[in-house]
Length: 185
Image (tube, rainbow, N blue to C red; front, side):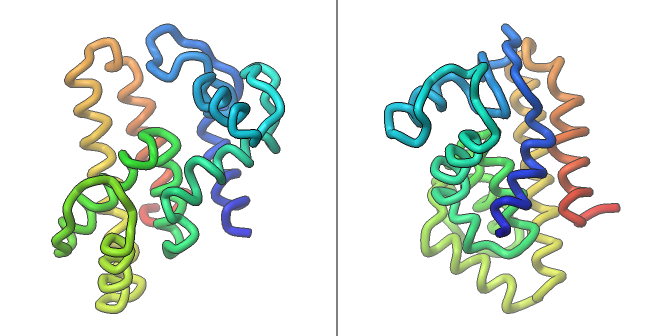
C-alpha cells in the first residue's frame, strides 16, 4: 500500500522521542505531538495518551486518520502524495493544502488559497497532469518544495528562536525529501 511506503519515509525524518523547549511541537514521539496523541486517544484511535509509549503501529493509525486521508493524498499522483503528506505532518493539513494551492497557482491554476484540498484543488492537479503528464508532476513537485522552503525561511525570519532549526528543515525536509521523491538527484 502506498501509504505504508510514504509513512516509512516520513518516519525516517521524524525520529523518536524529543522534547526540545524551543520546538513549538513540544513533547513528540515518531512525529506525533502530545496534543495530537491526546486527540487520537479521545477519538479512540489509540488506547493511551503517553507520548513516550507510542508505537509505530499507533503512529501509523494517527497519521492515516489525521493527515493522509484529510489531505486527500490517496487521490494524488506519486511523488506528490509523499510531499503533501510530509507537509501535512509538519504544517498541518491546512498548511499543506495552502502550499499545494500556491504551487498549483504558480503552475497556472487560479485557486483560492484556503488550505482545503477539495474538488477544485484536485481538478487543478488533474488538469495539469493531462496537459503535461510526468513532466507536469515533476514540475509541480519542484514548485511545491520551493514554496515549502519559502515557508520554512519565513518561520525562521519571523521567530528568531526557530532559526536554529532552519538548516535542518531545508536540508532534511526540503532537499532530502526532494531526493527521496526523485524530483532532484
